[in-house]
Length: 295
Length: 295
Image (cartoon, rainbow over the protein chains, first blue to last red):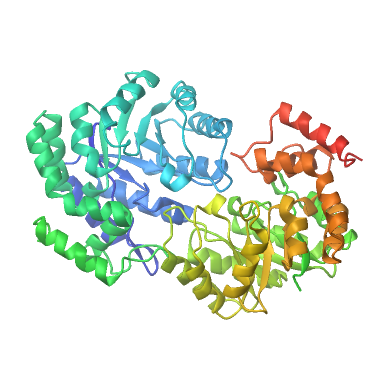
């Protein structure tokens, strides 16, 4: 159900809350490109900034625009009871899977994170994916903790950040040893996607596919068919974008691209997050021209 | 108004929400000990885990039990609009000052943090203190950013984490150069308190004073009177507690102490945070006996 390319769209905001028209437009582009799974309310979907009502609204719009694509929903929150409420809302809205980041203020211990996943799978009837995002949560999963979580019922798999350079394939082998064959191992970090899919990762959790789904689909199709040359060539075309992702964070860059292309309002991020400054926006325009993505 | 000792109590929880009885008890102990300022909804007050209603409830109970002590309230949240709502609630409930941490999921830029403080002081009529807490937020303030924030109206001062060993006095000198004489420079990290007050910090933002206010008052009084020997001697008595703070985090340790002394329910922290495990609780009991604080 969640194999190959999973596109993570922005949750664009307007003055009044979720910009439903813009979100439906983004999800429509994704399904039009033939992408079969969509990750709503991921990090790019700014889930921690949204109220419970806004999350529900975003999910309803996304599921309503997703056609026959499967929707996976982020449910992370500071407190277990909020996570469980988000899980219930997401299932009611039609999400087929849940994505849980161990969000924290006081850094969580391994036992606390285990307890969180145990409590959430107990309250869920769809698969729950581990969302490993140390850059935002500050929490680092040990392999021992992953082994404990992998044995819980209804764990669907894991979404990991890009491994250190050169370790994409070896990390997959380690994760295959920790998880079972029925678990899905996915990777985020778009610049590593070609290598990751060629190495055998089950899913590419993609930010760029939220904004350029057709090109991301081409990359994924080539990699999944084992056409290494083509997949890497497509990825290389995106190099100027990957460089911007690495220096400014993928969220701010895709938000600026969406704003630039008129897909969202000019101020689509939740305060205190700001859009990128003028000079970087000008670099983004140049990158879009260079990659032929400005049309 | 916020000089000397400022005590930061827990916000103890029960199954149903804020444990109002326990919170009133903790605040009562603080004022009974003669402490003149109280920091409600600080990191120890688990503010990021509480709903807006729970924060309001905790503040009302704290202000209602504070007598003539001044109350400073934490207002941090992911989104600017929530921070401003919390600021309004806190002022309505009777807080005399606000304490703002740049909480984030996507790490904030310096300009975003500046924008946050600017927006919040514009919406507040009481002083707003900068709460520098890189261990929980992941955000590191540069001196250049602090200089920009210090020039905003209604900035009351700053609460910093303990500087690197040996740098408590020199960091104060640097901060005096960044802030103005009317700004209050305060330190958290109880094990550094004696040295900090002796060095001339204006405020000791104290976790231990939330649970042992009388002893903290003695330490603060000695240090503020310049009695270095006495202040350091009192601090040394707490060494076993400081060691536990450093290894388990002060929140989990004071929660366990409060539970141990029967000041709160046995499970006073918000899930997924758990109380400490049995072995550590036994170490805590030993430390309390050793320090004579078990009675």
